[in-house]
Structures are given as C-alpha cells and as structure tokens.
Image 1 (cartoon, rainbow, N blue to C red):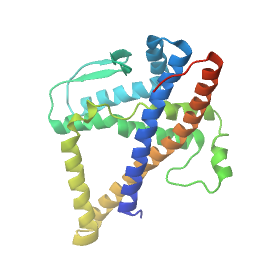
Image 2 (cartoon, rainbow, N blue to C red; image 1 turned 45 degrees about the vertical axis):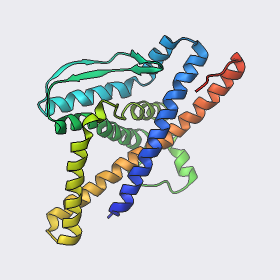
Image 3 (cartoon, one colour; image 1 turned 90 degrees about the vertical axis):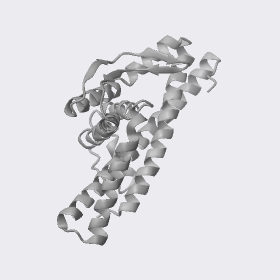
Length: 249
C-alpha cells in the first residue's frame, strides 16, 4: 500500500504546482485575448466561453451538494460579470443559511468533482490509467494520439482551471479541515499503532488511496496545463510581434 506521508507530500506538491499554473494560465489567457482584441468586455466573454465546461461543473457541484446536504439555494447563475479591475465572476450559487461544516463541504465540492472528471477524461478519453506512471517517453506521447485527444485535453484544461475554490468557497474550510484531519489521524493511529482492527485499517488505506487519486488528478492537470501554457506563450509572442504590442502583467 502507498506510504501515507509520501502521498501527503505528493498531494501538497502537486496542489502548489496546480495553483501556480492556474494563476499563470488565467492571467495569460486573458492577456492574450486582450492583446488581440484590446477590449476588456471581449476578454471576459471569451474567457468564459473557453472555460465554460469547467464553470458549469463548478456551479452544479455547489448546487448538487447543497441539495444533498439539505441546504436551500436561492438561484444558480452561469454568466460572466465584472467583479473589479481585471477580475470576473463567471457563475454563482446563492446558498441559504447553514452551519460552517456544511458550508465547507459545499465549497469543497467543485475540487472533488473536478478532480474526478479529470481522471475520467484521462482514463476513458486518453487511455491514461490512474496511479500508473508512463514507462517511457514514447508511451507518454502515445496518449496524445488517442482518438479525439484534442477534445479530451481541452476538457481537462477547462475543468481543471475552473475547479479550484474561490475565496468565498474557502471561507468555511476551517471546521471541515479540522474534522477530516482528526479522522485521518485517528484512522492512521488505529491502523498502525493502536491495533483497532482490520476494518479501521481498511478505512485508513482507503483514505490514503483517495489522497493518491487526488494527487494523481492534480499532477495530470499540471502536465496538461503545461502543454496549453507552451501553446499560449507561443501564440502570445507571435501575435505580439505581428501586432507590434505587448501585455504588461
């Protein structure tokens, strides 16, 4: 079975890389559109269209988990709106009154469903098995020759760059994080130190496996994002030379 500490390190490292890639891609995607169009309104709408599959999944995840947890919602919006200088809001679900724990789970939902969608697109679209490293560079390239590979790569890009929780989603993560951390420590201790039985050990292994899958989704996303980052950087430089202008970040 996977080492818990190794999986935790993998998860944290891949998440940090994902956060960095997400920020870079969003800035440069908007910058490239602004470079070509010189119109902030077009930037907002085109960015919305590029990320639309991920935006829809993000907001539906909030809405569905709220329904499951018995929290009232007051409408679901999937439409771009300006939120300040160079900032846009692409959708929203108005959540009714609930305790911080349920708020936290609702805020966490897009990250979980987005990661699952990334793994499914990779597995059934590109043929990439979960938690299996490519044996060689040629086997990695072979995934790019899968039928409809550009479509699946685009879906992974769009979903992953819209699945990260917004600032409002993260407001109630404290209670959820403390509770899940307590459960993880309890299960780990029960399985390795206290000897509390096979069922507890199975739960502990299940948590470690779930962490490994999440880290796998993050890592896969970083690889796909790197491909799109290289393409975007090439387009940005080419159009910058062609049009004789550049975007200051």
